[in-house]
Length: 153
Image (cartoon, rainbow, N blue to C red):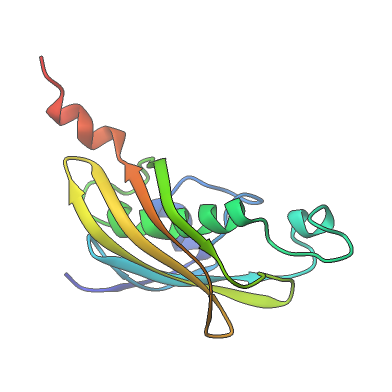
């Protein structure tokens, strides 16, 4: 399948998160059903830097995981028939945080589909700051629209 490049307005067509809870500015390469990568430019104006921590502002770990989750979802939501659907996080495993994600940086994310079956997807996700690994996780999402097709009657 052909890869896509999505700016913020196009990302909003595929997924339902909105500011201030949208953690994607640009998807540089989305291969539907396979992978998605892109970034969020972080400025001092981000709401979480004001409270986490004022003397040492950094992006909270679970917001990093949320950003990765949003990027992961693009690879499934760009498949035919999924545009604008909702995906839910069902688990995040093997979380690793190695480097602070700070203001005035670009949080670059690379996500790959490990498995997608019957509405359940598993991803390998990594976040980078200045080409250094900041965090990684194995993320599991569900597409409720799809699993309805497999309910036992």
